[in-house]
Amino acid sequence: MQLKVKKHVVDTTEPEQAWNRWLVKMRGETATLLIYEFGVAITRAQDLSAFKEACISPEQTDRAGATAEVSLREVVASPQEEWGTTFSGEAVIWRMWANHITRNLNRSTWEAAIELPPPDHVAHLLQLASSTMDRHVANLARSANVALDCVNGSLADYEDLRRDWNEFGQHLGRHRQNLETRRRIIEGFIRDIATPSPGTVPDPLIELENVEDVDHVV
Image 1 (cartoon, rainbow, N blue to C red):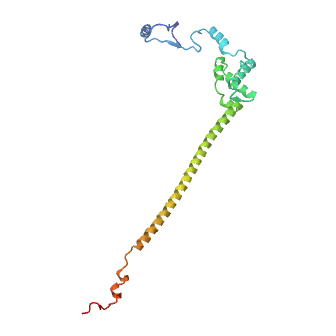
Image 2 (cartoon, rainbow, N blue to C red):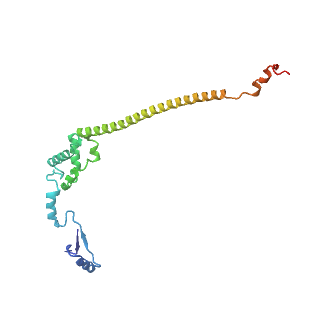
Image 3 (cartoon, one colour):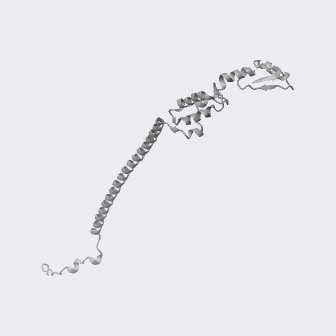
């Protein structure tokens, strides 16, 4: 960018104090801001034309001004070299990608565009390369195996828990049987030591025979 006052181009290398003095001096005046597409070094139309021919425009074009076939073939090879290990497709699809890259006729942007993923209208026509597909399938299989191992481990833990639970249930059953046996023993013991009622116990005095005392007769 540059500032221009009438026919005078403002020097942008001045120190800050000089800029401040210039701003005060230019109060009320109109300055034109010049924005150069390719930098301030290219100021003449002749320089711009030479720069575009050397760096921007395709090296070879057809009669309509579009990218020539030879240049297009070179561009077609570049996405294949950059993305060939990721995508596979017919030659016409790579050509569509090259046409998309060269459509702006600005050769300086092609290299950066080649490094970008394919546009949507080209991407859905491409397929994953076999090596990429193999890695993708291997990653899926590895993830599935990890998930399966986790489930199998949980099932093994469940079986251990169920076995422990069954053993605990059997232990509880045996413990109950022991308690029932002890209860029956105690109940029998209690029945044996119970005091009979007075009505069921015979009076021994009633059954005694009154024998006459002959040894002490006076």
